[in-house]
Length: 219
Image (tube, rainbow, N blue to C red; front, side, top):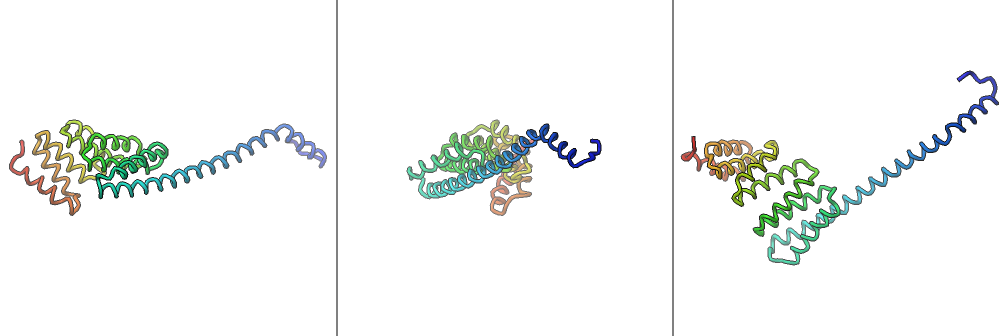
């Protein structure tokens, strides 16, 4: 822009610039303000969703705890089903929904309803935001498939999980699947792997599985 010589010229230049650009500037400011307000509203909504989901999950946890103490309590069973459904229907974007599905899978296993447990675990696998939780749901699904006598499906599911997560449980289940498939030498190796990171509580069980194969390995 050429140098302006007088104050009047400066004022006229400002007026002219504002006439050409003022509307765009106001629009940009309005958009920026709307963006900030929208972001704050979204953050508030997320906070409210998370808070409500947390409360619902705590209620579910209480119902499940009571139900495990009294498996025949139909009122608690109905309450637990309802709360788990609320989490999945209304708060699926939160981690609490997947945690709720994991809880309900455990309840179903306790009741001997393995198909229902798989349904809950499948939901958790598909919707979990946390990778570790997703891996845990996968391992548990594989364990249930093995319990149902489907070693091939169990092996396929376990292959989708990572040995880096729950390494001892992963290796132990791998050994169990191999035993079911008649691959005893490989199973013993898997149990040996599981023993490397086994907890003190699980070590005796895994050690027994490992030692039981000492004389019956396939070459």
